Image (cartoon, rainbow, N blue to C red; front, side, top):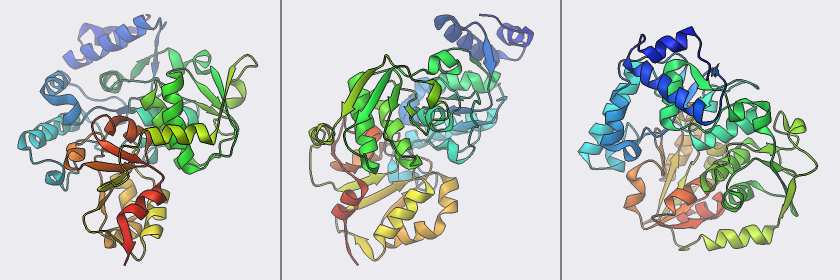
Length: 389
């Protein structure tokens, strides 16, 4: 892989040991995927920073980059607890200490303490921007809804890109790497929750590739949910939605295999994932809730209260929480709790409950590995844990 003079100096250690390791990572990725060169990137989103994911081994690895500074705006994924309420999520002081040490290292290298899986609510990449994002749902949203370009980075490769300002130029950074590989039709008009079910089902069915959807509406929250599920049950870093994805018109060919999805097929799949119909907690916000989603939840919860013995936990970013304070105050009046900085997937909070109600395909995929879940639409879930006030 061709490196320019500055990249050669990074590789030789002239910019510090952290930058040397970072350049080595990008070089190995480029060699593996036959990239001819690197490409400069606009920004980075780093995943896998919860102590639940990293542990002591990951923390020791992270320390190797502590002499470095990021070269481009760099955002962080959620951590293992809400910084304002750590003990709600864990009573393990070693967990809290380890998590704060991770945050302090990222702070020292210049990463922004965004702690969200929805960085596009903080800075929205433009069509054609080359970025290096690692959070699975954010990758799909950036490529598919915004038309930015990022591969399915890991936490460590995204960190390497943050430190070098580069990514290996292969895959979804190239026009040919963004072509559709399979066409998806519906024999019904999908609604909001259908997007999550579709993503979870289709990801498990086709595993990888780039689907081209017909019949989707330009509902960004629904599209967010679709992409999050696709890239969890499968390795699908982008999709094309006809009339929505900026480059959809150049992505499809007449020779693609066609899959037609029916409502019965999706509903049978959803029911196969349900292990209980009596959740003791409902968790919403995977990916983190948008302002519009918070508004709709607040409207539903008006003049309602959380049932005795039940809980409702909502997850969003600090930026969105600040923008939606009036709605959040309404939500809190019901007895529900709103958290930032973390979520049900990367925190230990799921360990506190027996049955968890979820509307997220992504959360269902991950949380459902260890817990009994009830997978349903938001209205159904909210009705299960609320009474009239």
